[in-house]
Length: 353
Image (tube, rainbow, N blue to C red; front, side, top):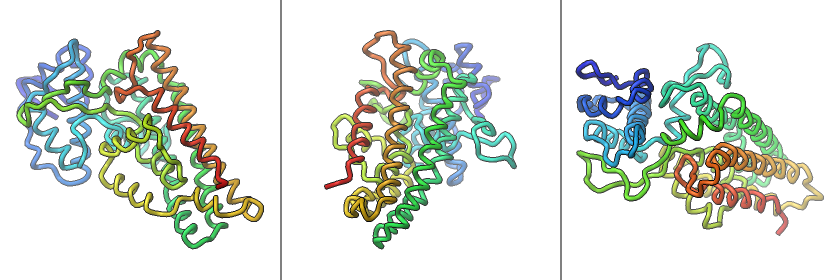
């Protein structure tokens, strides 16, 4: 919490200040935070969540958008971002991986037992948007050890074990698809487009100045699901190759917005055996279960990207009503990117040389 002269900026009062038009004034009057007292891991992640939300809220709190973030916010935000190894802006790792609590502390890590810690406007639709992303991460986590074990089995040329691990991964991907569809239950497309999406947008040219840090404007992309390491983990192990200029460079770029440990994990996975190459080396006639389980994984991942593309069209394109400048939460041309990513996934279905 930040407090000065009875003006408070925190995760509880922030939405009220934004609604009343007083958020920027509150930030401009808050004291310079002593970020040096933050401990490792949990405290840093919490600080990054709060400070990056404050930064995005400050920039997009009114018209025109701010082009400078005051030093009293910019200095601790940049310092904490450097310590966690990410750019000083809202990103998926903060809004999904560090922004949840259980309603029942003894209950399961399930969507209906979760709530967010921080939001911009404290809207039910907004909380649901983030909660679905959190729940997808929780569901998808079960695929990661299965895929790591599948790579080890592929190195040992154990096709039966690879098939078994791929079956686990395929079931997990389908659970992710089911969770993604729950977005429609409580997140209205118009509320998302008009109220939440602007706060997740990045800094367009010429960028935003972080006062007290540098007078050179910085450009960053906004928060979006592509910054999750989960789907890129599936791609890396399953051998989905994003060679299109519409998707490959962007997927490389967003890794800098991931947690450093996740980036290193992806790099290690990519050094391991490609399961697609392993499946290609085994005749379908002698290893039918291996081929079936691999195709189930690729088919599920293709459906995930199809659902994501359809959802982006409904939540952005349809709400933009013909505006050619409509962008996704990352400030990018989402249709071209998502379409290219899906085509790369479909290409991986062909496993014969």
